[in-house]
Length: 267
Image (tube, rainbow, N blue to C red; front, top):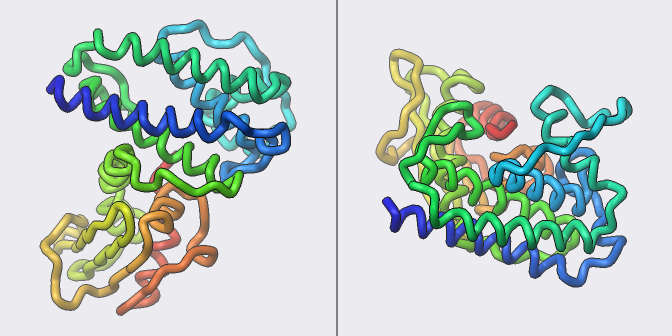
């Protein structure tokens, strides 16, 4: 278990260090660039990362009242996340980056002393061992690194170790997408063919009980969706819509369109 913990912490650290290195020469204009997250700039994403890690360190939450005119906030969860972002909006980008460096160093100093089996509440609301919780952190930090890279036009680190944890975490949502969100019919099978730095094949079939489950690849699935890893990442995290990214659809195009439109399983 400790070996697993060391691996996921190393993946988390690598993507955080990559983000920090990327931002070292950002200009004020870079920090102010919009990202795919509504209402959030590059600096706002860095502030969000700080807020999550400071909360995990047990730092007190900022005493801050949000303004009323933030139309991108849709629910209480979004309002909670916005506090750490909004409180840093007047702070210059380099100071936000310096705080992220300091916060990461404190987290990395603390993590070796945490029992991998210690239970903590995951973003799903369930209690999980800390080693499992860190897969969420590797995933979240990797996705946000890519948010920043797209915003500033500097692609890279798509093949980071944290990408595998991202595939792992997003993969849990595929049966839910096919069976619940799309409500595919019994006997229908959706095959995902993802290419690139994190290549994989998944087949999700709907049984007579209308539940969707993983199955061995079948010769003639109802629909096959083929896309690059980055495209899958964009759709599965709700960053882009299907009409803006390249996906090859073979078979039942109507079912394929429904799956692609419902692929996002993140809050």
